[in-house]
Length: 148
Image (cartoon, rainbow, N blue to C red; front, top):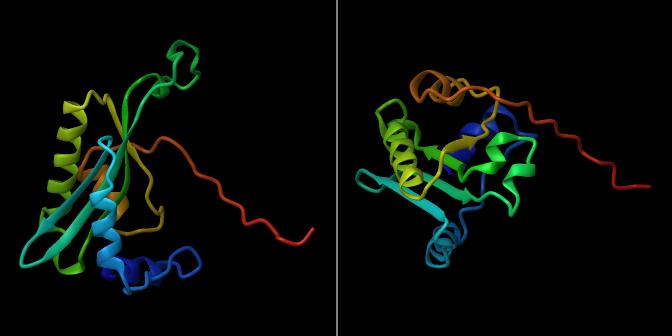
C-alpha cells in the first residue's frame, strides 16, 4: 500500500493505490500457486517491509533465429520490487535484488532485466548506481480510444 501511495503521488494517471481488501489473501494465493519458474521474495523486519516478484523467461525452440541476442538465453525478468518508505535506502532492496540474481544464476539465467518508472527519483538511481543495471530500451505506450 505504501509503495502504491508513493507511485500514485508521482503520477496518478499511471498508478493507483491497490485496494487493501483481500490483498494479503491474494498474495498468499499467488505464493501457493507459484510456478517453479517464478520467484517471490519478502523482506521482514517486524513484518513485511519489502517484496520482489520475478520470473524466468526461456529461449524459444530456435534461439539461433532470434534477432535480439538476449532472447537466446534464459533470463530473469523482475516484475516488481517494492520497499516500504521507512526501509528505503537501508539495504532491503539491495538484498532482495542480490537474492534474485543469485536465484537466477542457480536456475541457469544469464541476464536479469526489468523496467521501472522513468520519473522515479529513487528507483532509477537505485538500479543504475547501486545495482549496476544499464538502460537498454525505451518503452512506448499509447492509450487507445475505445470508440470507433
